[in-house]
Length: 219
Image 1 (cartoon, rainbow, N blue to C red):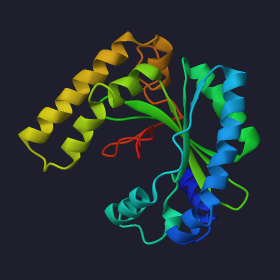
Image 2 (image 1 turned 90 degrees about the vertical axis):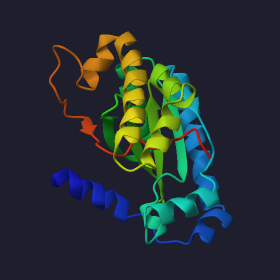
Image 3 (image 1 turned 45 degrees about the vertical axis):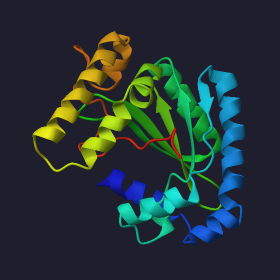
Image 4 (image 1 turned 135 degrees about the horizontal axis):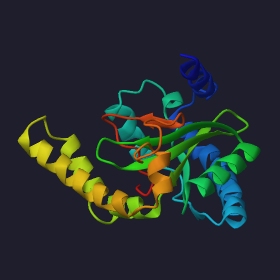
């Protein structure tokens, strides 16, 4: 309950504005530029690889509000976004620590889907209350998702009703990500609670059942 309160308080500070005001007024672009500047500095300092996809497209944001039945733009927290590819969980932690020196942050920890895909989300708050999303990825998993069909399988399965066809796609996803997980350094599996001698659910790992971590390298 405490975590829920902290999370609500963090999101509630985000001002209520129209999509037009956010996009046409240059608010989002200003924050994206700031995040990019900080991200590049963190990459130099930590050795992580920084990815700047730019702000989410306005039409994509409008479509998301309809799909998620959002009533206000306060509920959109990923219009400003960026990501880091990291080689180890320790490197990821260094990235998070440095983000926390530049911004007020809400670290949502590592989240693993039932199919074995995982990433880490850190929400950052800008001076005016606007929230942005930073994702942290293990490179082989991200490649499986974006280049080897993982995301396409997810999108296709999401649009199907429960049944054999959907299950077949989900099994395919599990097979894809399991293959990647087997090749990762054990420190990763311990971090996301898949290791032999690790506690089953480390404190900074959140479990998500139906929603896959959102997709940065898109429109």
